[in-house]
Length: 270
Image 1 (cartoon, one colour):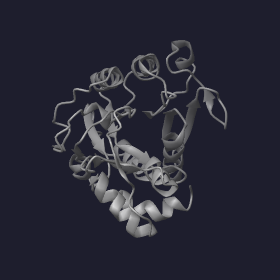
Image 2 (image 1 turned 135 degrees about the vertical axis):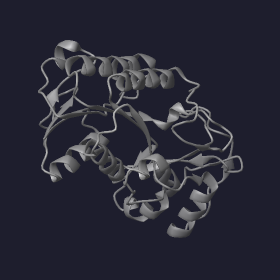
Image 3 (image 1 turned 90 degrees about the vertical axis):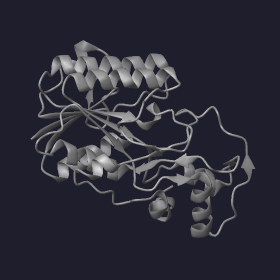
């Protein structure tokens, strides 16, 4: 079986590793073409036409911290180009739980409204629409952490963390390797779940206060101070508990059901 991975960053590298461990041939792209990847600007149809055929495609390219213009090119134009060039080949697009703008602390499933309050979120929904219309799969990922990467943990250990107001806001996270395993699980499910959306997060949404209390216990450090909300967060300020129940019902289970279960191991890699 052949996999095409579009975007070979933090998550893309883990996806490549997971599929190769199971005997798949993997071709991966990056904008630069470094590290044995194929150079490809997924927004450029001329580049996309040069990509090799595959049995399954994963679009997990990053926007490069760009705004709406980058989202349009990488996600909307990218999904459009891939579905045009590879009709009939299943495409899995890695979207984001940031498309849910709920602020009431409610449990959010794939059936709940996704009405993002930012233009970038609206562009993710358009890329999702293109993918689903072509019979593809959408995974909405929570905040990714893992080896050498955790914004929450870095801020806590450096003393830069702040508990926003009373700390009631929920944090929804997913370990990078659990995300890669979930994507492999969906790619190899039979029948393939065409036209489906799955929330990709762990099983334990934690309030900010609960998270920091547990980290303080694990690392024997004081709680961070309280402060105002950070309204400039890239993913927006939301307050919701994202459910992974639909994905778990397919047989997938996270190895790390909670962010704090992996915190000590991740801390050693930061």
